[in-house]
Image 1 (tube, rainbow, N blue to C red):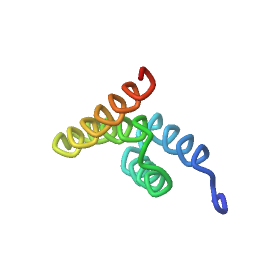
Image 2 (spheres, rainbow, N blue to C red):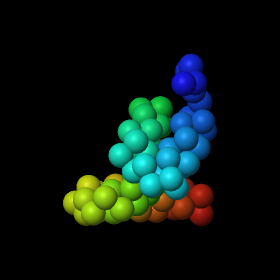
Image 3 (cartoon, one colour):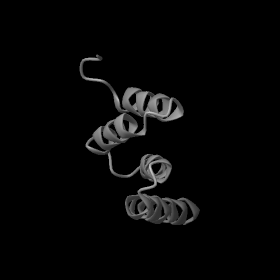
Image 4 (cartoon, rainbow, N blue to C red):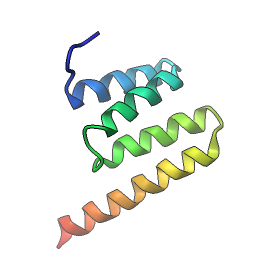
Length: 80
């Protein structure tokens, strides 16, 4: 267990857990990451993918739509 892990560490652990097929634990890790930032579309995207693997499509859709909204906002501000 990492004491006071950084956001990057949490995302790396979550990604590794998802790659190992441990989607529930990966979801917990990604949600922990969201307590530290809510502006990274990648976290929402990966949460959606985890829920898809668990065939929980309502939750998957919710997170994937949030990822899309955030990425569009960030892209618009980048291009402005």
